Image: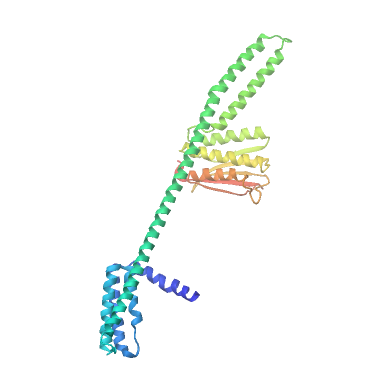
Length: 357
């Protein structure tokens, strides 16, 4: 069995592929010549040795590579050549109609071969066509799924920006007005008449304003300008340091200008998620966000001095990583995470150069 498989893979399959690429007229001419060569060889060998078994080979090849009509023509030609070769070498049957019966049996056998092979060829072509159509359908569905995921993500970003804008323009303004009214109340109250409590109320309201503005900034961090990502990351590192009591810094030696706001938003969210993972899971106390322009595009990296990534990563722990990877892929970029120079993990996203100025 292995010998037959080796012969098929090494000799028969490559020859069949090469023959399938030839023009049909060349295949027809070659198979006719092979039949003639077999008849000539059969004549030269005489009655001592017959090549009758090999006459079916051109018929089979014609049925598989060319089609049913030419295969029947090949069968008739083969039968005629076989009869001529037998008569030329004086191979006579004791029965008067013996040669005709033999040729008739041979033609019936060829018809059976032709019908079986053409049917198999038809089924193979249908199977290949069905497989190709299914592959195209799967590719279309995959592309549609990617498009839907991108639309959902962009819709989520728009909704976050709307909520952030509402917080900034609505709640923050309302709290600011409340703080001003409370300040007026503090000035009206004299010492010992609850002025200290009113002043404390003003401080709490001002703290609420700061928190609301921070939430609004987190939901809508990047302005529409080309340098908005740099400004947003700079503010994010400052807020992270104040919020968690760690040292978070932003490194950007040369300005990196990004034309597409959606790309800047995805890069910001990747940095935001990477910092969150470093603080929550990595227990980092030092984090560096670096943004630079390279020959391959914009490179965003987030490094920390935490405990690094657990091995293996649990399914629930990998959700943030999958989200970051999906964001990177949605802008045509590359995402990776590896041990960093600071001792913890380093998240890297490389956005292609077409997004930058």
